[in-house]
Length: 240
Ligand SMILES: [Zn+2]
Image (cartoon, rainbow, N blue to C red):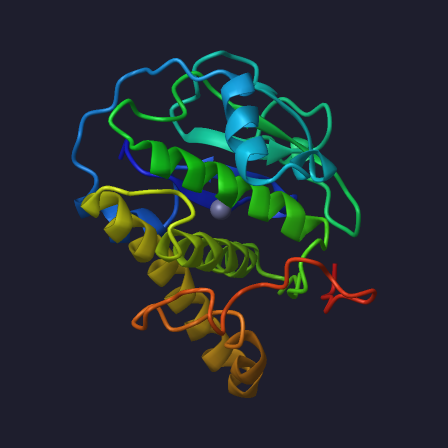
């Protein structure tokens, strides 16, 4: 599976924009165009981020290529600790906690040439969300569940709802029909996996988490589902 973007969280917290995990099964039918190497520079990604979030350097210290200019087969990009080089390496995993900064590793072929400008903004925004969420920069729970795959499902669900909502608000411009479906599909996959876990272990907890994760079957816009842009002095925190 060469197309599509899936964030996964590896054990010890490495955030990856990669191509592994069950979510790909949900999105496989949506991305049929062939991928070719495009020439994306870290400066271009910085420009995408700065156009939406002038404060992005509060959460992302550096954007650079990893050990190679072209991406490894398994990933497209990923957050790493400052100075880290390989998002696949758990030892390079991003920091988590209030005020942390991380680095973003990208590759020249992170974006397939057929992607719309809106998609590129959306993915950059997705990465911004992860970086800021890990720094407790949102009034949103940052929690660990003791199971790496569940942590992944939660972090990805909340990040994909964010870009789903922003896409519906028109923040990125016009996505292709396939991309719009892909965004919703990715959110739905993580949402459903995480929701299943909650209902299997502690159904009452959904009264809490469901506040942040709107039903993907409904129209998701800022009204009623927006993360707070500025955290209160004691943001709703989690266990890490
Ligand atoms: Zn992600």
